[in-house]
Structures are given as C-alpha cells and as structure tokens.
Image: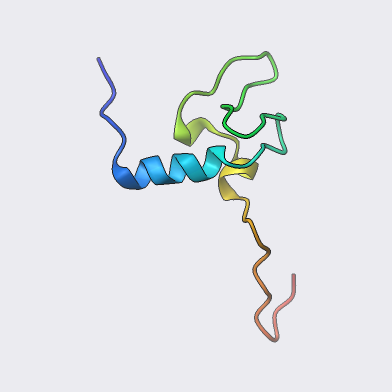
Length: 67
C-alpha cells in the first residue's frame, strides 16, 4: 500500500514545520524529528507537537484575558 502524495497545503505546512528546530528532540532545521530511541518520524503528523504548533512570533493577549 502506498501513501497518497501530499496536497499543496500539506507541503506548505511541512516546509513551515521543518523550517524551525524541534525543542523536544533537538532536530535541526530541515531534519525530521526522532524518537528517544532514534527512530525517524517521517510523516508530517508524527512531528512533535512543540514543533508543529510553535509560532514564529508570540500572539499578543486579548485585553481582559490571562496567559
């Protein structure tokens, strides 16, 4: 069974995710994340959450909210 090719949107997301280092496993820019045992996580959805969800700039708080 083969995987379907990535859509343009997924390709853009993958480039964005791999353009920043992973604070969890230490993967550098353009490297895939790895598990603690060194297994390569070679799928966009398998990349560590800290890497997938990090933002380039912090989002300002909305007035009246707490962090």
